[in-house]
Image (cartoon, rainbow, N blue to C red; front, side, top):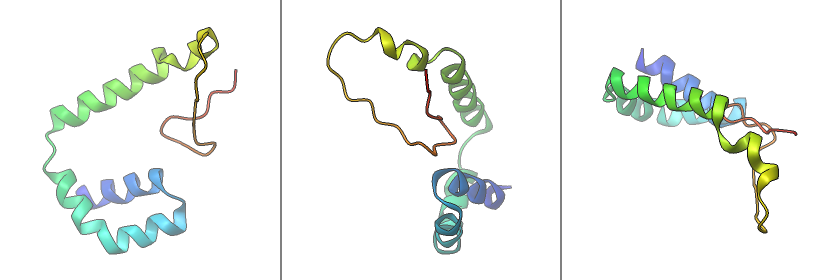
Amino acid sequence: MPHEQARRLLSLLFPSDIAESFYREYGDIVAAARAQLSPDLVNRQAAAMDEWHRNGVGGRLREIIAPVLIATGSEDVVIPLLMH
């Protein structure tokens, strides 16, 4: 259901107290936007995220030879910090 998906999405993106506050304030908007997404689009996004976790660049970061800034969130549950 769109409202359950909105709550779950917000809980992935924000700490629990903030996510619940955002859900109370914007849950209807997030749910309405989510309801407009086609199942095919959602499935393709899920497949892309699965592919990223399996074969994304995270495992190849040590191969970079140029100066680069890599920023990540230590509590990111969508794309977790890779400690190699």
